[in-house]
Amino acid sequence: FDNDGDLDISLTTRDGDGKTRLLENQTNDANYLMVRTLGPDSGGSNPGVIGTRVELFDASGSTLLARREVGVARGYGGSEPVWTHFGGVDPALTYIVRITWPGGAQMTSTVVPQNVSTTIGAQTVSQMLTIKQPGGIRVVNWRAVSPID
Image (cartoon, rainbow, N blue to C red; front, side, top):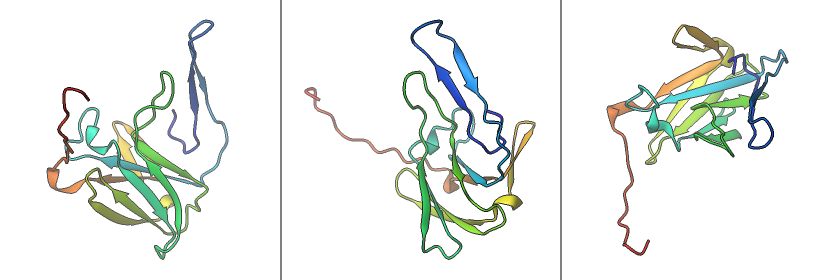
């Protein structure tokens, strides 16, 4: 919600008053890295990144520390940002981020979390790495469907 590195929760209920509630995490913990992936047509809803896999490795690239998938929704009325969050990282250490785009192309980036930031509109978000899919090509996988499917 507030892009301060800790995860906040928004609750939408179907029963009762139907109001949405925001549970804002008040901890002050800078041990995180966020990775924002942009598709080739990175305006608007940015559909090019849905299904992107983001993996976090140690500095040598030999140990996988965490893996996230970019999605759009979780549960009833849920949504999530189109970026991934990795908690428990040391902001002063070096990490390798490996991106696997929809269609299978891969990219890697070396990052020290405390040294990166991303500006979205008028807000600068600390410890957020932005990676754009190169080439301006969006891969779409199609399959034939029979009328019975």
